[in-house]
Image 1 (cartoon, rainbow over the protein chains, first blue to last red):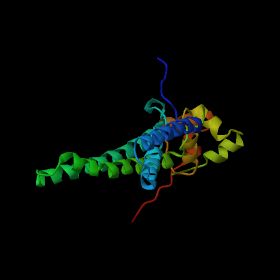
Image 2: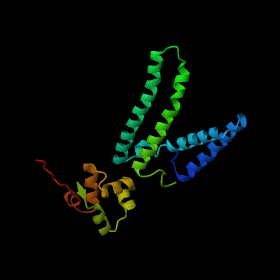
Image 3: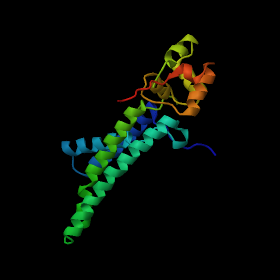
Image 4: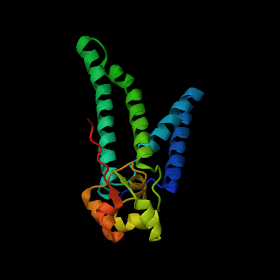
Length: 132
Length: 68
């Protein structure tokens, strides 16, 4: 079976970045423009690029697998806490609107994933896949 | 545990990329082993010694430290 994985090469990352910029532009055409919104959307765009898997798990060597396991475990723990806090808040006060409580934790959850992914790639030794 | 992988590799004029290809690991892993950031598995250590035509003990030096 042909491998359909899109590797995060510099060229692929640039293509995705341009495509996401079009999406950001479309959002501004449909909604009003603000610098704060632009900044937050750029953060989301960079975050999406940041969490892009370096290569398929089958291609990892023993060291990369160990690092992947270590960082994915940290990521899982951190995001689990981001889910646990709104659940606790809802348990303490059921009158709260669930979607509001959960959506307030979306930003810290995504930020955690981005930061931990970046740290994982830093330890892996490469941010971009070297070959086309 | 320290190692003299870099020294032996350079003696045989093999660069990190070639070494990585021969071992079936990434170049970063070879670098991590050379700078003592990663201790390879027994299998990888044996593979490296086979490629460099030497014994594992000649590449990887285990320094015993007994705490009193």
